[in-house]
Image (cartoon, rainbow, N blue to C red; front, side, top):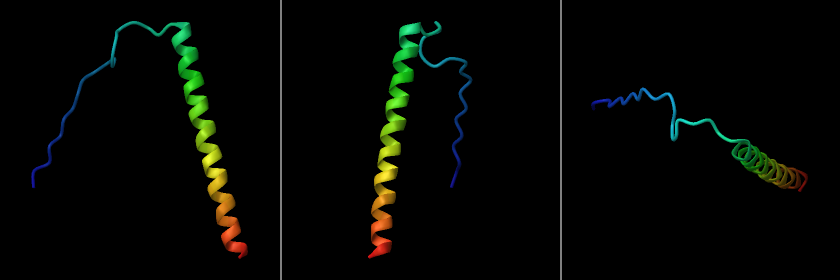
Length: 55
């Protein structure tokens, strides 16, 4: 079986310009929201696991 290795020499993905302040804020909000959602899910799962252990 052959291994296929693809290496890309890329400095930037997308446009070459720096992101604007508005884009930076939008990205920060998106990742914070995503992180909060993930934390809520983990808390919910851990609570369910605790209930199963107690039963």
